[in-house]
Length: 356
Image (cartoon, rainbow, N blue to C red):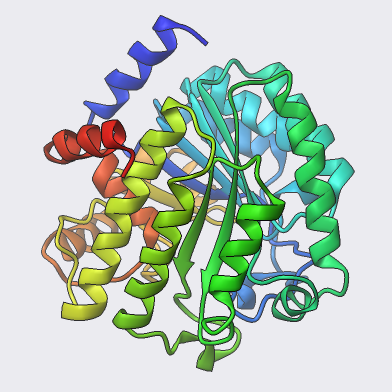
């Protein structure tokens, strides 16, 4: 890490390209989460996931990247995940990589994360451990007996890595739903006690086509109350400057979600499709994970993202978003819209300084 890395980041913040990429690198998953928005696309034998050589072509034609999130499915089921990170680091100059995981494979997560850190000189790499409850309740929500204990093992593996890699961030991500709203404060308290090495716990709202539809009945009052409780806990956790920045953006993100739940609209311009894109395991490109309107498939465009974005179909969908045709609580799209719009920088800076 160094000054040149941060100058490269500044240049991407000022650009107009889609420099925030969510790449679902596999349709395979070893969880069966009740709140999963992507469950219909997982473990489908008809799905044809992109090969590494295809991903290399996508990377080569993509352009500069600020943030790369690798998801799935379970991203650590791809043995070549470190090579995927290396491609985007070398060819697209990405300095921030986020990988969520169910934590079911502690040794694989530790080994592959170590490979990424050794091969890529990143400003920050963030591993997000998915934890929705404690003990057997977590196992029930995730559909896998023993998941909670496996996640604890994964946490310990990553703590060992952080002793030699200060640019490794550890977070816990909890999905708030009707299935855990009564126990989530206990979960927050337990995380503070039993996972003291994390940078923060994030609570995100259940969204989209959840496997169990009834899980989505969470009102604004419940969400705001849970997030206020979480703020107090997060303020006490050990952190560094970059983690404080992510926390400031996360808190602003939370306030935007509250506004949507209360008023039905986001209080900011959504940049999904313009500054953030989603690529699914088979190469289909979407503006975000919630709007089910594909821009095109990279296999049909010689893996060139710019060619897709230039089509009449893509321009029509991006105009629909820009014109306020949709609004949702997708935290990643809100996150990108905050980070990649300079008008939000003064309040992000202030929140970083004061730790809120």
